[in-house]
Image 1: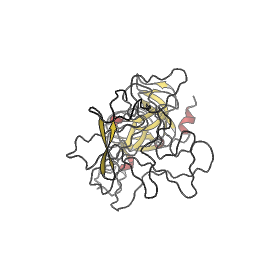
Image 2: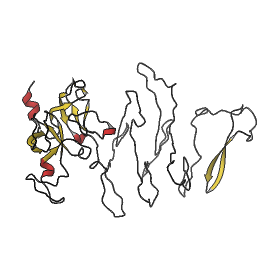
Image 3: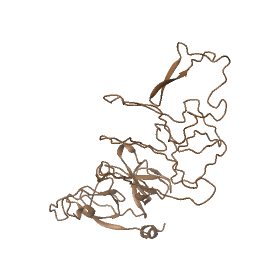
Image 4: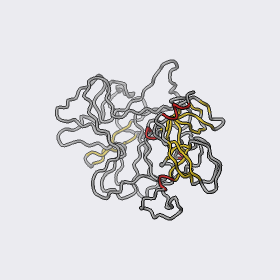
Length: 355
């Protein structure tokens, strides 16, 4: 192996002071002492006075500093009760030696920094582990922690969090705020056009409720307007036209449930499916909302919806033609309330008794 090439290509070493007292193995992850109030000479420096220790002191990973990854140790070091100066490989995209406890596959395995761990490991949500690298060789270190070549590239992963808490937009102005923005124009023809494409695959057993992604909006103050956790807006601008394509209509939200067969067909008999699942869990509330509906429909002043929903083909949703005269509600049938222009009406759900 050409040991010179992978250690010189883009590699960046930095001399830093390790504030811990224990021994260090080569490739250990370390974090900046971002909240230090002591300078390198041991003098107290009040917060807000540009303390150089914040970018020259490093410490073991912890829940509060995991966001401030400094790099991995370039060499091994014996214990030193007073701390010591060391060198770290900075996370700039270079391929370097890292310490890990994972079974690594070249170019595939994600390595994460974890609180209280001296090795890069799996990015478990429960431990707030932060992905910072991708393995660059195939080596099984799951039995015995050791060295693996890896590309230190934390910027490849989206991880936005503060010191063991949320980041804060400290602006009290009553104006819109945006943290991440994608604004694209596709001039090409044909093929899907995507501003964001994400795939999550469940390849192992276990809890998999949020394979693709989870969006959560917390409300911790008195909201002055309606709050939406997810907004989907199909905005048709000047000169825009609509065209149906077979069974598909244009929509602000497109949801499908699909199967795929290459060699072994999927088995669906063990569970249930829903195109959209809507749960309602407000058990801890001191009082019910003034109104609560699974679906809330509205329209503009010019055109209204043509109907509540459309079934593309006869029988698509288990529908069938009644074999007798239109039945009347009877004992045991369900009356489902709907609100129309502020007045409550009922949809009748007839019991399955030969309708």
